[in-house]
Length: 246
Picture 1 (cartoon, rainbow, N blue to C red):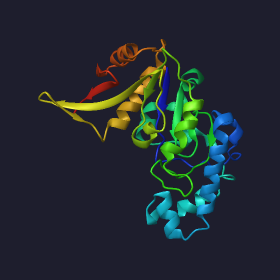
Picture 2 (picture 1 turned 180 degrees about the vertical axis):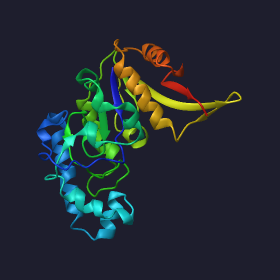
Picture 3 (picture 1 turned 30 degrees about the horizontal axis):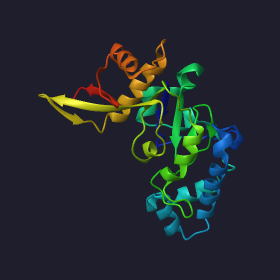
Picture 4 (picture 1 turned 30 degrees about the vertical axis):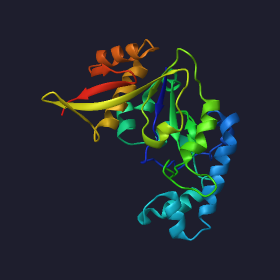
């Protein structure tokens, strides 16, 4: 089983530590040239008129300082990705407290790095998959062929997908089974997609799967583990649907 997590918009900036070492990040042989290219493009944004740089980075005028932050990523302090990424999903998952074995079954999607492992050391950065950088094009399309080459994709494998939006579009396995996780409420027999608690639900389900003594190899096994952990679930052809209290 491989669990794919989204990055978080909120991040904790490491205050100490050596800068990122590209050759030590996940799948460095395949992804390093593209990571280096993106770092160069972000550094160059600082030379543009601020309004244009802000527009390309996809941040608000009040976040204009992020342009300068991204220009210095090569020298900024780095820390484990499991500690840099924060937010509701990561709070519920508690990734830093999980075993090395469990963390080894996780990859975190990233518009800047492609994917990283929980123990990969990265700096605080600001780049979403919706950014429009000159010479790069859409970031999902930019990463797609590289991730297809790099990521494990075996017959009989199970990929539990917690990503959404453009991050999901960046890679999907062709041979392994892809299982999304969705959250719903149910009132008087009517189901509605949950938005405000979806990240929390995904974090809790991911934690249950990673803490299980028996690693699930099929969607059915993943559903059994989630149900045993107290979730009300239904399995569809492509997703594990979790019914949460309204």
